Image (cartoon, rainbow, N blue to C red; front, side):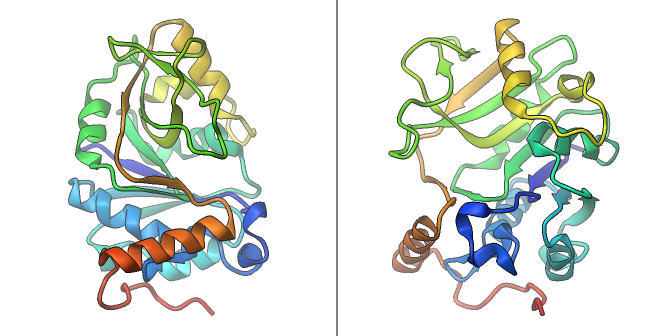
Length: 243
């Protein structure tokens, strides 16, 4: 069964002072924590086994979400003594993710994508390529140059135009991280660019709702939007209070 990982180890410097005492994925929009939106959408797409990494205030995440039973999932926790960056955190969690392709979601974004298509993309990855499949979005105003070029055949390239922005949602084969040493910080972008140069990364353009919830202003805007559209839950989610 395909597993999913939610990245939740970031310090959230741009969110301070909100993140001085609360991990960024537990900040609320539309009446519930950002990470809970992901958990609910992953479960709706058929994911039952989730891995969540943490570093800064990680104990608060575990206290709030527990083993995942309240959400109909099973959560395995991947603690990091200090944040290992995206690729390093995924490499550290591989023993929990297993030897099959998996889906990864940044814990500090909001996206209305259907995770069913990402799960299908993960099932199509192989050790001899493709090694990754990324969900791309239109370039936001704070990142106008984008990240990668998506060609007509669905392949991603580190160079070329037009460019789109990586959403933070993707599917990966464990082989992409095989050369990394455990417990060593490592960024994801260099691994992806190397795989793109070998023609081993595919992608899809998501035209729906996506926001990088990286600042208090964006969090407040998302909160107002969700409350205004009726997408917010009528009652608070079943998250244990954090003290």
